[in-house]
Length: 112
Image (cartoon, rainbow, N blue to C red; front, side, top):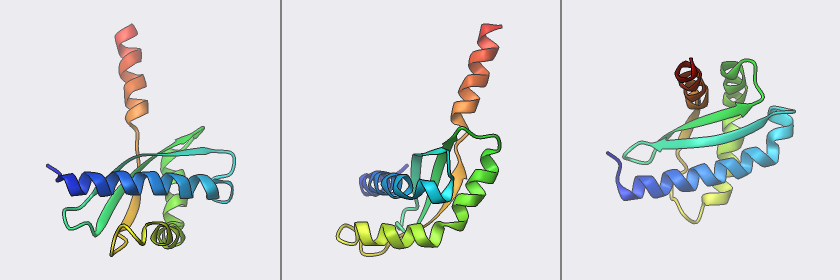
């Protein structure tokens, strides 16, 4: 159960990370569209799990590993953009959001 503060910070991080990734997408994952779907932050606001979806992709886990290599640069840029809202920039890591694939699989099973 997350607090109102956690939800607000999660939404702030999701919005800002989406913007930063969209600006730098050409160098990180050229030819692909990356979407930050969800951000879950710890109760002390020091660590966040960032769930991303990449389109088109053959190997989502490999794309997430590429994004993980850019975490220091992304955290620096995030710090510059949210410095007036948060005292400490949370550390974060990327996780693959496979909910869309799961929904497609269920839809295919229901059609059978």
